[in-house]
Amino acid sequence: MDKIRVIHDTVGETLTVWLDDPMKEHVCEETTDEVILMKDAVGRVLGFELLHYRPADPATGISVETLVQAGT
Image 1 (cartoon, rainbow, N blue to C red):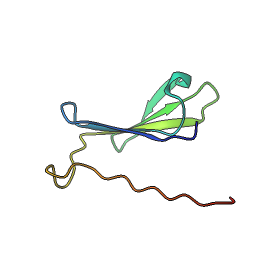
Image 2: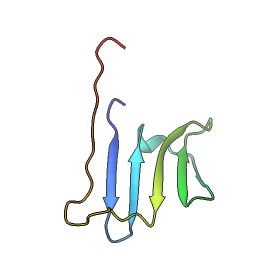
Image 3: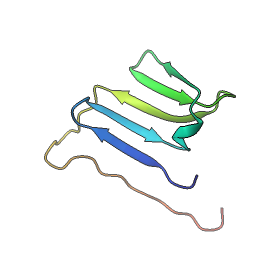
Image 4: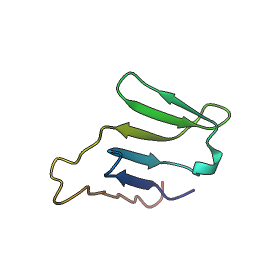
């Protein structure tokens, strides 16, 4: 997957970032910092979820910056 999915749930106050296909998810693991790691069957991290997430300025929401490097 060449896309990164960013999902902000304002009701549940979570921010979920998928680095790969969510359908590959096999297990979730919560860290001590209220971060959930979603992993595939071999333990590779597919994404993460931040619990109790609220943007610094709710009026503007979140912004996502992309950087594309050619030739890498």
